[in-house]
Length: 373
Image (cartoon, rainbow, N blue to C red; front, side, top):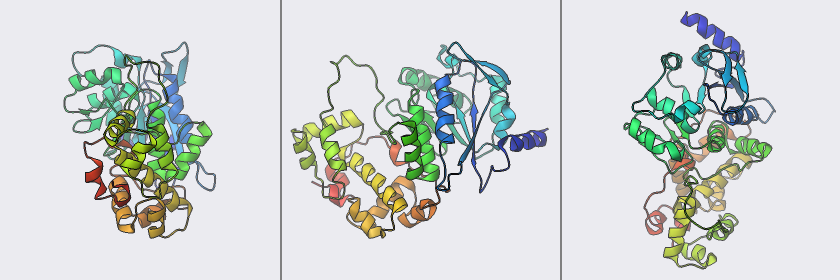
């Protein structure tokens, strides 16, 4: 029976799936699904193409019992594929369901859903959108891992699953091959992050441009939770950040950034963390890593020139930062992504989802020569 299911799954995904072929994405939907979340996965992954214009992913939708699936809207979705699809998936994405919002006193995983998860191969990448994290948690996939969900449901996720390290203040997390995202729109950020991890910044940026969305939002920025404050005005540190992005290759100090915002350094640092969810040095390092990745992918500049142009000062400093962010060296990153549009690199600690730490510019400056006071 298992062999029949595997053969069926391989047939459904097509001959191009597997090593050397397209990455296979299975979207596991449930009754009460949000149509937008299903559309996000299909639109973004199916929009990823190689330099030769070839699709990099095969995306298919399945459910535990094929047929008409009720959505939260006034339409249904006819899903013809069953859980056998999961046996050959490289990535399984679980969108939210309105059932996730039902009050519960104990974790609950429907038997049919548990059987479906049992079909997933070890090592398969798992991801959830919004409250789909409750399903991954109930199945035990989030135990001992950092995870997030919609801010309204974060307290319930922590209460029901104390073994999960719930972080309610980020857009998405990536912890050892299991990913979670916050509210609906953060599913876009999550999918772009996976595409970027699989195939590099150039491919992810092209998908973002075609979809008319930002190619990267701060994974560590706070979720937009309603607060009793006046109508939003332009962010006080926004001008300083815009200036910094135009001068990444130069020496940028905290004093200079604070002066751009007409603030003291202490006030600027506090406001910066409130707005972005990162310290100025963390944010600056991430943007420099972004620029360095682009230069490695799109130019033949030597590593020491990339390091200088991105503001890291020395090749040694650049190597340390890139390895901390992605787990690879500059030469390995370039060999994987330069011109191929695809590759196996998977970041060990994605730069986009690092939580803000209470380190100061002075302590971080030791590792970042151009970002010191």
